[in-house]
Picture (tube, rainbow, N blue to C red):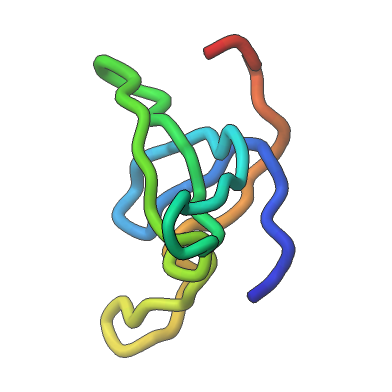
Length: 77
């Protein structure tokens, strides 16, 4: 898995998200990506970091699930 850094990411379906931190699952120790939507109610989400960083197929072409697009515009949660 590539190193994930905090900042803004674009989901392969088009939405933008801010990766806030990488945490650890309290029971398994698995790395978890903690991120929030940059639209709407700005909900906070958690998913395995490996899944956040993985490639998915879009119209038969491998693309990143979340592609880094730059530093965060605002850091406070």
